[in-house]
Length: 414
Image 1: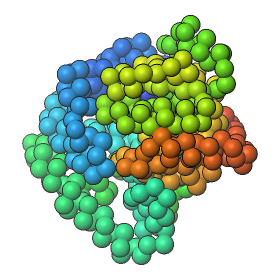
Image 2: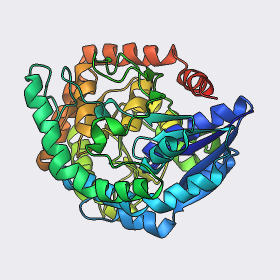
Image 3: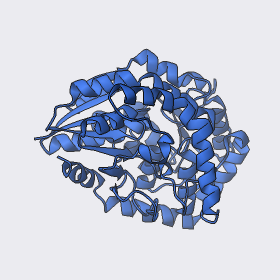
């Protein structure tokens, strides 16, 4: 029996895949410890993990309330500054939980303390990447905006863009604190943190299938793709009676969600309400922050704070969302069309990949209106080719077993 130490960073979309992996490891007889923010204590302990908080509820709330978190450029800076301020604490928590000769570290892409610990102690470890946008390439690079195909850009141009991004945006936010920690534990400084260093040299796991993102010739050789894990707490939730009656009372609704940590979605829900009225459709609004909902909603619109996607998406006509990788994967699994409103991070690249699969369209947040949203939804809902493609990719997901593949890949590190 081994001990797996999981270190996810972020919101539900970042943490849920690690919960799914940890549950699968537990079922195979291993011990699991999770180090992450306090809001995820209950779901981790229900899964049988030892839980170690890396940030309080108040600190998590402070981050989600930051006015620049969902800005297309400033959001990454906010996240990196938050990680930099917690590097020393996170390292000490990993150090305390690590059992030499028994523990395997399973690290989120942004768990830089885990990456330092791996290097300092020679610990068996894997870096887990949830979305393909983390991988740079001279061939097919991440889409910087929805629909942009970088495959024809010259390699020198792409390398220059990455250099500029590292030199002026990423390294100034994280490298000073990171190298301070590295110096304390006897390691030399690093630069261009996102270029190669963030990948474990032992094993990288991509939690997406190759039909979603084809492996490029210059991606790291230690990478293995295992597929979408799709964990969403369905084991701990049942649909309440009112929601069940709503779903049964009429035509399948359109589900709208701006992301589990998005507290600035007033315009999103206003456009959603107008779009459903224009289309004559029913709607299900998902958000943990109801203060951003329209003041007046009729019986054709229902709000829920949280519902597992796997329980409701198969009963929906379509979904409108932020293009987070977890939501995108759940919609692919449910076989329904998607309209995305990508803000930043991995979302423009995910949007582009969904569009290439023939299952999605997008609306830029700056152009988001009820009229535009209704137009994009109508084009998807009225197109039989979209339905065929949705069913095709849902079938591909049903034929895979990502959690078993992920566990086997991690067990090889024991």
